[in-house]
Length: 221
Image (cartoon, rainbow, N blue to C red; front, top):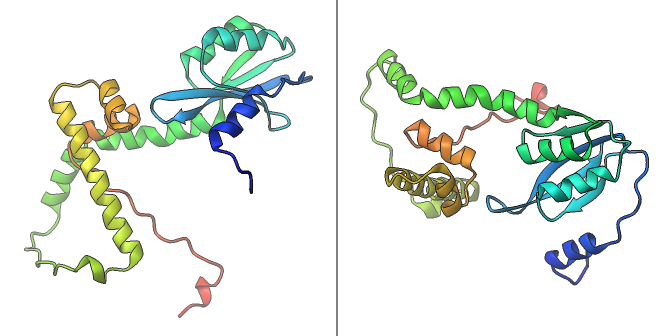
């Protein structure tokens, strides 16, 4: 953008900007944003009717949030995730408002549920798959020098190597009886990822999606 200042300076100026009086915001959405993922979070509240931000808060303090809600008695709907802090703050600061789960988190939870179920049974699924598949002695794959690989393939290998190293670190900490919270703090991964990796029992490969069909595909040979 051609602005000669750091990202932190921009955030400070946004935060220190005098708060303008917002009127007519009966439907608001509240969610967190990350200063440092897995460590420090702030709060963003938006007007769901205009899709514009109402306030950007540097933290998730319950009292600060409740105080903000009290300034706007016209609020009727608070859309949020399942955070207990946001639920309590809205209940204390806007008791007249109805709290609902936002659509994004509902859809994400629906998508995550079968994935978590599958991860819990990965060892059994692989065992059954190996018993059902025909027994073939795999032919040795020729080793391909990294220099001869294309750039996307090299990047894919490097990403997998780093991901495997992090998975190994997570499993080592788990074997030392570290809690999910402690592993998350040490590695910088979310507790959801830590929990999923530990319960899978084996290294979870990244799923690959087939390329999307383009408009010209029906005419390709």
